[in-house]
Every structure is written in structure tokens, then in C-alpha cells.
Length: 208
Image (cartoon, rainbow, N blue to C red; front, side, top):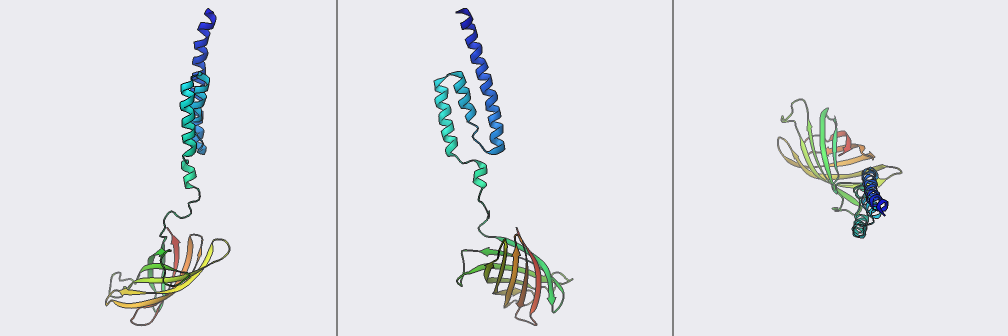
């Protein structure tokens, strides 16, 4: 009886120590693969023989099962923003060589024409004299039709209208044609700025 009395606390202490170690390993495993770390609490409760701890551990396990892990919440997220933004940089090819940089914001749920997508464009077309009288800043409201091709490639075309700022502001428009390859693309614009000859530009495009 004396031996049994002394041995039993030691067995309980060893059980708790083993359970604590298993809890630690379970926590490390949870951080690595998103699994439930609360199972270690159940192991401790089982080894200690404490029914209250077993009940509490069971409730923790059930709550963790219902709660999605951080990794699971990221699965299936293909577009973190509902309004895709792209940067564009290229050159004005005609009638004079100039730098053409811009950005565009797509509004997928807003369209005027059926099967078309709305895009807001802003560009800055300038030569060596940045900010001079020859700088043109088109801000246009576009309607684009997109045709998806096999893989991650798509082809689009359309047109837009808006203000052409710089010097004397005027109303103008443009025709757009382009293609995308995953996050990258190429686009050609023909601007009718409301003054002078049409402006033909070619730009590279990247999603951000």
C-alpha cells in the first residue's frame, strides 16, 4: 500500500509531463500545417484522468473544428481587390516620339454595353519638357469587350471618351486594343485628342 501510494503521484506527474510535451509538438504542427492544436489539451486530460479537464478539452476541440484556420481562409482567393488596377508604360509612336505612362481601374460590375466592362484610364503623354505645353493628360471612361483564350491569355478591344488636359482642355476619345498574359499585357491606343493628328501609343501593362 505504501508503494502504491508513492508511485501513483509519480505516474500522474509523468503523465502530465508527457501530455505537456505532446501539447507543444501539437502546437508546432498546427503552425506548420494549420491543424488543430487543441488536441494536446485532450491528451493531457486523458493522461491525468481528470474528467473536468476532459470535458473542457472536448469543448475546445469542437470549437476549433468549427473555426476555419488561417490557411483555409486564404484558399480560393484569386483577386484580393474587387477593382483591379494596372500600370502602363510605353511610348507615343506617332506623330512624334514621346513617353506615355498611365494607370487604369476596372469596374467589373458597371457597364453601359452588354458583355462589356468599364475601365477608367488616366495617362500622361510628354516629351523632354515634362509639364510643358506639349504634355497631354487624357482621362477617359472606357467600354471594353474581353475574349478569354486558352490558359491565362485574353484579348480585348473597345473605346473610350473623356477629357484631354494640358494647355487647352478639350473633349476627345480613343480606340483600345490589347492582350493580357497572366499579370502582364500589351496595349495599343489610338487617341483623338480633339486637336491635331491622332496619337498612336504602344504600352506594356502589369497588374498590381
